[in-house]
Amino acid sequence: MAQAGQSANLILVQTHPPGIHVCVLNRPTKRNALSQALIDELLSQLGLADGDEDISCIIITGSGGLFSAGADIKEISELDAEGAHGKRYLEDLCNGMRSVRKPVIAAVEGKALGGGFELALMADLIVATSDTSFGFPEVTIGLIPGAGGTQRLTSAIGKYRAMKMILLNEPLSGTEAVNIGLVAELTDPGQALEAALDLATKLAAQSRSAVRLAKEAICRADELGQDEQFERSLYYTAFGTRDKREGVVAFLEKRPPVWKRLE
Image 1: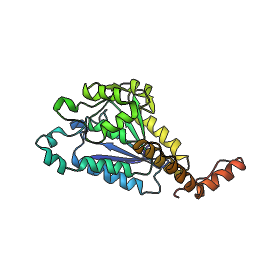
Image 2: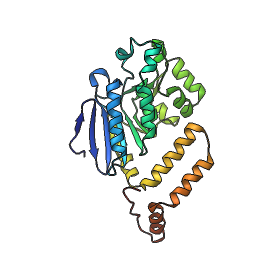
Image 3: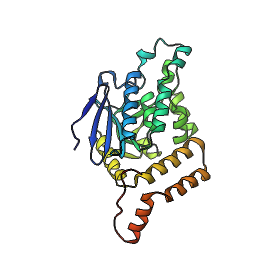
Image 4: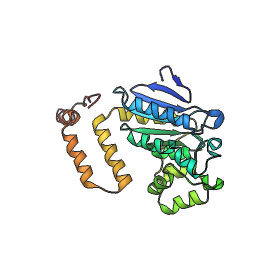
């Protein structure tokens, strides 16, 4: 069970053993809309968790039975092109999520729309429920996704399915998402966080240095295409870690490895 939760206003923080940091989007009356203030608090929590040697994995989820309905429309309603360009919080969110070296899991209940869907796509793993709905409704208000959604969705499910979802505002159910490989694990309604905690517990049992290097290699391939040379450089780096030495010796001695907390 969780230890006592700590409120950071728009982000509620929970800690679960063994070293799992849960960030809860906390604007339930606004459907957890991604305001600049909420994004700033989320990035602050992610930075703290990523730098804490006691934290092995980060989970992002929403309050009030849904993940996030997207951007705060009222906040952006008066912006013109120049004003939108000057509001850099979407860029900050992309860069901040990209810089997190520990694995991040999105535990999605209910709806993940627009910027909320983009936030889930920035995670390393998505856990969803059978009644989850993913979608990009931006075209219905004359906009398009602006936090990498067109790029990540196309990479994940292909050009033509992405075109249909975005151009026609056609949502994707949690069941459909797991069938096409977008969602890592599907669970019953109300159980997304518990399923994410189970995954995070399994991740916490792995070598942290190996998980970090593997995540870096996979993200590089996803963003820039296949790069075997880059993967190989990280592979060689792994050979210099304490965890590699411990893992090999433990295998030869037929015992469980004892991983170091921080490489």
